[in-house]
Image (tube, rainbow, N blue to C red; front, side, top):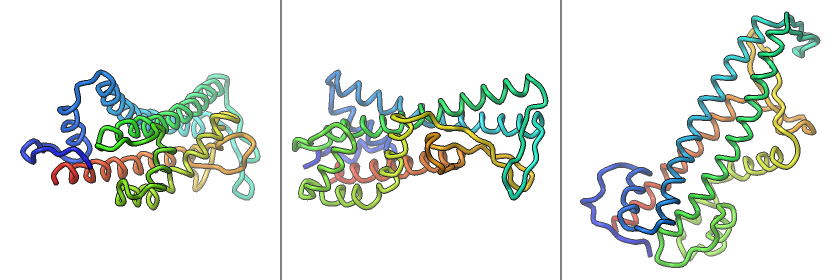
Length: 231
């Protein structure tokens, strides 16, 4: 059973409203650290989304103005900097984007793990596991604890499984490899999850997709648990 609270205290919407309500019910230092960490991680994820996309735009400009290139069959046959300044700018931006993709991916997994700790405060029953992946599996295997939440975790988190596998590849193999793509006269920034794989991903599409999925999950989470508080 989830803790109850009077409807009159529900002043905000969705996730933020839930955080405010639950904060009023817990005074332990551990809970406060979890509450703080959720807000901090979510905030910095959004900041890294903007940072990565801004760096991509800068790198596209460097390629467009500072490099000589030719293509054949849609693929680069030559791409060379016009001078050392552009060469250095490209290297710095590619490294920054690669590093920030790595950090962004860590932050996403970290946010979900902290959220799993937060979930333990929303039930009267003892909720096992404080890693998101393990807790998710536990809910799915024990649907009698909360059938609706277990069903959502089972049916709506396929994107997280794919993301987690790719993040583990980046963490345990090689850093994301940033490469150029040129279509219709325009540059875009791609990356490979590691240098041993051929799969290429548009960087901006990747970060936007992950942030969108996080936002959808957070909205569900807030709405779902607030309804339980209202009962």
